[in-house]
Length: 306
Image (cartoon, rainbow, N blue to C red; front, top):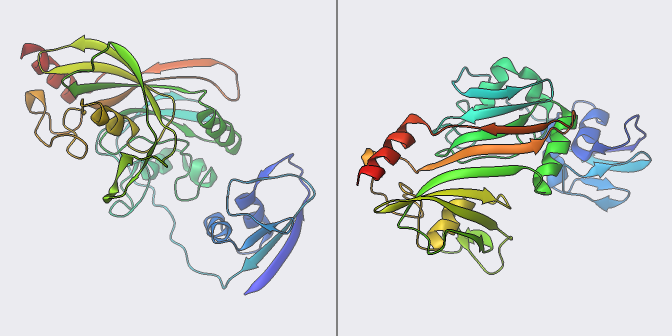
């Protein structure tokens, strides 16, 4: 174990802590720097800081307890199919197909959206979190539709801030069992780990705030087509909230019923259908949409015939 001390003096007006550490400690990769920060091995002006994204200003003193170097595996670039609906030098908007995980994790080390992005956009490798480069928000593996990816450090920081401050409108389309009593409403219920099943989310008193707005688009015989807008972006938020009011998403075997949906649909009927936001660099207003994938459209047509 060695101790590294340095002072951040720019030239930038601010810098992420993990970047400061990796750039000023020889032989330390960014992912290793991030792990050191989270483990409590980094002090900022004499105080332990565990957030890799903590903002460092010029004149800040940083101390790092540096362990023996360790070998690290690099994210693989893997050719995968996905749509790109918007692209410039700062960001991408991806139309993610169902079944594609966003970033590597247990069981999915090289077949995720991140791995696919690295084929044509290798510059994202050093943007944002090392384990999920370029990613500023996620959608579930079994949900299709639109999501934003950053291509530059500046865009990543600004987009992440916009997501936190709820300045990105994210609209979803869902087909649910039954239907809500009102044509529109707000589900406001805190979410956290289900104390009875840690693999699930649940409404819990001490959970993080979570709000989902819904609007009925079409009432059918046994189901209802909803438009949903996220005011917060918690894990499985839409699915848990809709289940809590007695209208689980069709095909959701975790928070609803495992039975197939209309037309034999074998997955959850949930699609990230629209994104609108102000471009963080150019200031342009972007409004992007994604039509229902074929399997969801066929299921909706079947529901209309019931």
